[in-house]
Image (cartoon, helix red, strand yellow):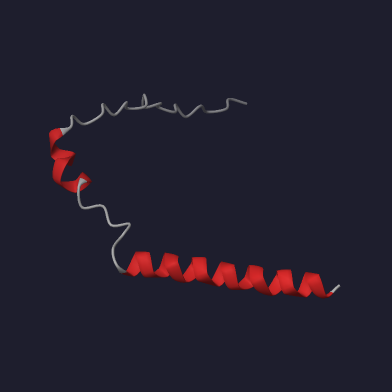
Length: 63
């Protein structure tokens, strides 16, 4: 039973280390994308397909 407590403590410590590494990487700008905005204008824009406008005709009920 004591092995479960040891494994639980070790897994929490490992999780905290990975979380700290992630926060450190985000603060240092590891995930900032500085390349794509500079070359975005070089690529052709994708054609935007317009959905056909459906005109709803109001139907009057005749009694």
